[in-house]
Length: 86
Image (cartoon, rainbow, N blue to C red; front, side):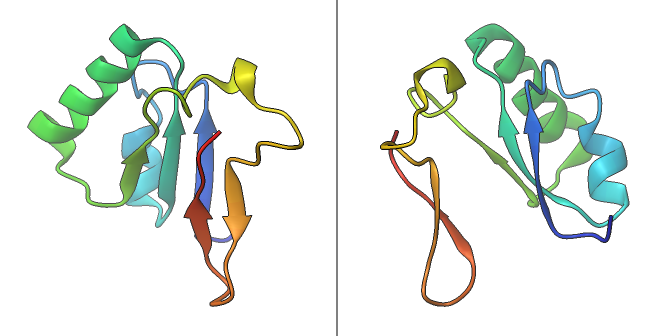
């Protein structure tokens, strides 16, 4: 898979974000547990310092609420993705 945007779905405490960013990926980080997500945010803020990670926050981070009519991501006219409310 060539580098680009990727979703770390159920990213937990962020154990994979170092490898992903070092290999050219930009990350949508999705972790429904606020405590685990905060650990990943702290890891990035204090150690990695990557600007290539977008941490999804509540309510979007709770993928249990996602359905077809509430798309989280929609393709924009400029051929990139924008985040939409769930």
